[in-house]
Image 1 (cartoon, rainbow, N blue to C red):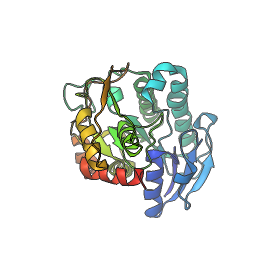
Image 2 (image 1 turned 135 degrees about the vertical axis):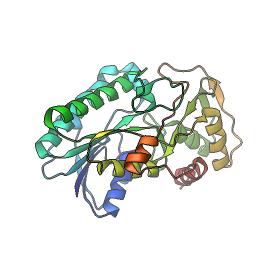
Image 3 (image 1 turned 45 degrees about the vertical axis):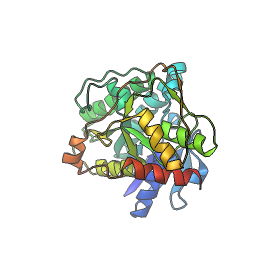
Amino acid sequence: MRVAVTGGAGFIGSNLVDALVERGDSVVAIDSLAFGKREHLNANAEFVERDIREGLDLEGVDVVFHLAAQTDVQTSVTRPAEDAGVNVVGTVLVAEAARRAGARVVFTSTGGAIYGECDGPALEESPRRPLSPYGIGKLCGEEYLAGWNRIYGTAHVVVRLANVYGPRQASSLEGGVVAVFLDRMARREPTVIFGDGLQTRDFVYVGDVVEGLLAAATHDGGGVFNIGTGNETTVLGLHAACAQAAGSSAEAALEPARLGDLSRSVLDVSLAEAELGFRARTTLADGLARTWAWTVR
C-alpha cells in the first residue's frame, strides 16, 4: 500500500514507519519536527516536513495513520487554544485531505484522557468524561471522524491508546512517566511522583501498539478500539519496576498531584481482541528492559 504517517518522526510514529517499511509498504512520513527527530526517520521512507495545520496533499495514499498531535496534558491545561489548534483543527484538515484522496484514516486517540476516572477497565462505550483540554480535543477529533463516516460513507478507524512507553519516547514535554523515570535513573538524578503513587495506569509497549495500529487499518467497518493491556499498575509499582530494570536503588519523592491527572485509568481490550485479533504480548518487565537498553545505548 501507499501509506502516510503524520507524526512519522515521533515516538510511536517512527516505530510504526519502521514496521510499514519492513513489510514492504511505500511510506511517506509527515512531521513538523516540533517534537519528532530526524534521527528517528527511516531512510527508506519518503519524508515531508510539514505542520498538519498547513494542510496536506495525500493524493495516491491508501491509508493515513494520523499520529501528529500535541500530547502533553499539562501543556493542554496551560495553553488549551494551542492544544485545540493541533488536535482538533489539525485532525479536521487531515480528514479533509484524506477525503479528497479517497484514503482511510486510522486516528490515534487516547484512552485515559477521554474516559476520565475509571471504576474499572473502560469499554469503548463507557462514558467519556475527559478531565483535561487534551482529552476534550482528542474526543472532538474522534467525533469529526465519526461524522465524516456518516456524511461521506468513509470507514475511518479510531484507536484509543493506553499509556504507551518504549524506545524513542522523549523524557521532555511529550514524554511519559516511563521515559522520565528511566532517563533520570540513567543520569542518577532524583525521581518524582505527583500524587501518592497509588494511581494506576495501563502501560503498553510501543511494539504492541504498532501491531494494534496495523490491525486496525485492515478493519473495513470503521469503529473505535481500545489498545492496551487491560492490566493496572500503580505508579509506585512502575517506579520499582523501572528501578529493577535500571539496577537502581532510587526512591521517588512525592509531590502534590497536578490538575488533569487521573487516579485510575485502565482499558478493556476485549473488543480489539475479538474484532482485530489484537492482544498485547510484551510483559512490563520485558518492555522496560528493552526501553532501558535503548535509554543507555
